[in-house]
Length: 350
Image (cartoon, rainbow, N blue to C red; front, top):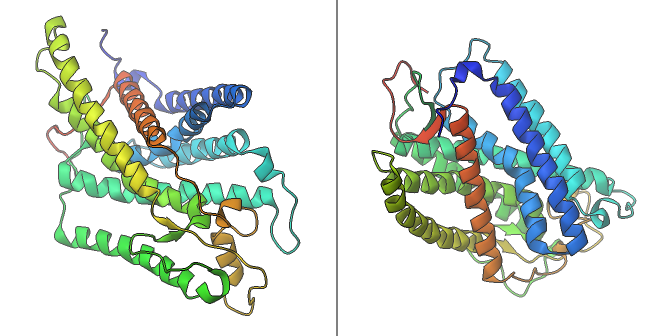
């Protein structure tokens, strides 16, 4: 296998734009196939591939330990531009016509604005939580994305104050939203029992709340895959060594796939069923924002409890996520980067 080119000989901005365009093209093709075949796994694959630029951007921002460029403002501008294009592309490609082309309801925003806003909130929430969690993981484990043949920075170390602040913030946000919602429960919530302790969000909030949950799990998923690759990488790469490491690596990845499927299944249980009713007291502050946050008036799942998909769906989803992480890792390697725990001599702090 040829050695990767020097990072200086590659335009990373062009490479990132090409990769994003490739994700969009692959998403279009898979979406068309899904529409023709009506196969849910293909549709799920299309959605996941279209979301890859968001997941990779979160990991890159959280774990990048390469020396910052002289023009530091170019990198965030490039990331923002690429994510904006990819977000709009995913909205137009993956959104179902029955959702975005439904009839507008007087007094509410249009369905197009509603669903686009939900997707933007999903992406923003995902990025904020994934970057924050990714930084905490880096402080604990020292994991990072480093240049192979260049000097890199050292990650900061975890302090008790930082961990306490992160845990307190996550718990406070989830509990605050649950309490804020339940204070209106006599008006808009009709259930026989109150939500259990682990049900933080009404099911109508899933379009944006799933971004928070996914952002929390993403760094853990990358950490597990990276640890498996590091653990099964033998010092000297020969044909015999590759044959020895391959079964062990596949076994560990299969084990993590089952654990990741269990995490996906558990994350689907964070929502409780809610029923919207008309005639909310709009004299209550932020009542319209409350209605939007739980899906009023365009999200049908807010009226009904969602049926749980079979466990095979979660296994397929976990397998797909693992494959996408491996592809991203290989792409980074081609650009001269490596995701791992070993660091070079530091010249500054991250």
